[in-house]
Image (cartoon, rainbow, N blue to C red; front, side, top):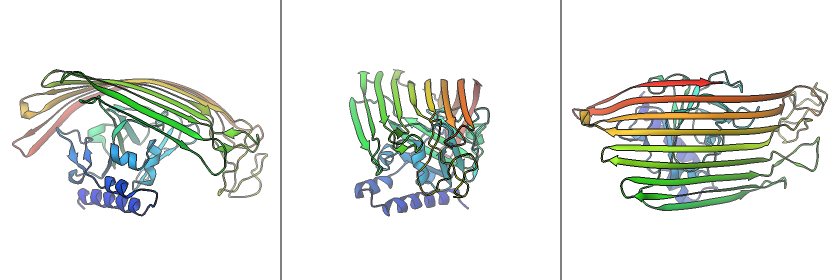
Length: 384
């Protein structure tokens, strides 16, 4: 079967599901049917998603805003055969599966089967992945093995996230919101904004973006009634610079500092809805949010990362040479109540320190107006 038919069917299924949702305004529905371009094929020019011979679903900035996407997990409900879930042991650890291929583990030395790429940088471990996203240009989900274009750890597929570049015209934006639940506990506040534009016309653009989320916690730990559980604070800071020293050379550098801290996971103990858990505490109905744990735990995650993408347009095949260098330093400490009971049983403390460096060098061009050529080399190393 032509993969393009699968792509069109996927796009239609998403549009149909959205059209049936009363939560979206009519203009949001029309936004979701706009043309989407795909960069994950790494060709010379971005392509219309309907013309890409891959099973791929893509969302641009307008579509992501219409769907109210604030992290990758939000897309789980919009894409067929794709589950972008949090593993649950500590916040932010990806348990991604595409077409049934996934790894359900928070152990950092276990390689994922779905690779996540941010501005061309492969995230070497599954920790620190399912965190708040903002100022995003596009998100592309490729289903099926993607080893030719992305190397290892993409047996199930690839998730490609592209953040917004420093703009050619001055612009600024700010968004905020408050979420609340029926339980009447804590509210969830968030604010995000960016400002940027040209410093030297056609030569130098700068932009600064920031995000702050203060979640007061929606849950209640019945072992400590009257107190909100699930508190979380997230801060992201992302400056970027776009330099064009000549007409055919462009350098795009992005830095990000992130911090995420708060309570441990809200875990429910049950044995097929039986009244006893076997761990010294009561079992809870799966259809409720009731739970009782003796160790509320914590999580503290921090990371610094930088990507530098150099594009050089050359005459050979009217092509482009691209070099993407990236570095990431991620640290996390956490404590979780694994047995999810109100008595001492199985608790876990963990600490992760990961450093990674990668570099991709590739060429993309088109010959005789009918043949596309993409070739390159990729280097990656990390210490955990």
